[in-house]
Length: 335
Ligand code: AHM
Ligand code: MG
Image 1 (cartoon, helix red, strand yellow):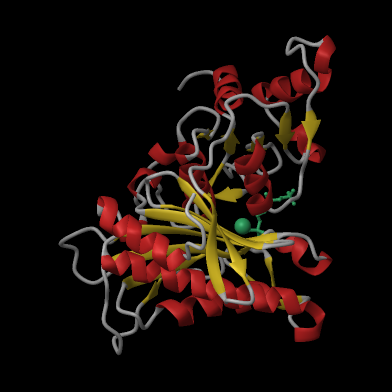
Image 2 (tube, helix red, strand yellow):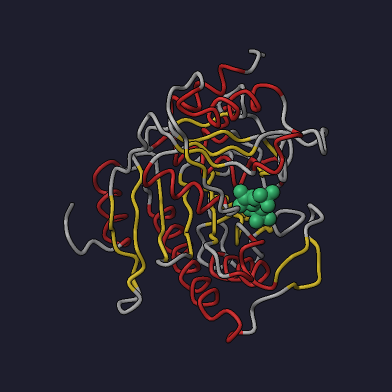
């Protein structure tokens, strides 16, 4: 891997090499990265910046918003609205889409994000992150509406996340593998620190919130029971478990060393497909995982093939090492 490659240089070289990054998309990704730097600053200040605690408001999903959820949302909107690269944005923290105001030029891209994923970890100083997904506005549609966003994950043109942990790290795909950039705080730049990330096909590690076990359906219970049985069970090997409760951090670990992540459907709210949101959590993470040689399904179907019907749609998620995702998906009845 070449030394001292900044995100800017990486994007320009990708643009030259395979044309996967047109100019507007490159600008968009640089602006998202700049916004992530600001969010990282706010996260790092914590109590000193008076950014911890509840904002005493709720989002469209009825979840209590933290101050930092709102700050991160505002940072992403303010950074992205004026550059001319976007037509509209959508966020976990906003009920409806945010159309770029008339005073700015409108671009051809749509940006979706979960501004600060893992909200329950904000106040306890555990890793959290920003997840983002980029789509192209369908050609020929006048103006921009919510229906323009309702595209399958396979239509994404860029996806990534920024994790605010011991290091601030940006992980990105534009469809030619997965690259990782670490924020150099002295230089103020994201520097390329890993290319062509690959998830091993096999693993001995799973990530799931075990406290929900009694609510799961039979195939998920069977899979986890078999992992728990370890060497003496049908899998013939011991498994380890990790659960950070920030999807960003759990997926980051899987990209770095393999594993399988589950947030399955459960009986508590049977009308909901799952807890996680399809368009700005599951789709970008699924594309990253597939680009790293892993797999992602909702238990039955490939997540990237699902046709969304609404912006804040939820989905069950199984992603990570290919053979484990294949096994658990195989335990479900085919549709
Ligand atoms: P958030 O977007 O409101 O932070 O919620 C999503 C998070 C995921 O990051 C994580 O995997 C999951 O919720 C944890 O849920 P639980 O607290 O049920 O374990
Ligand atoms: Mg989230």
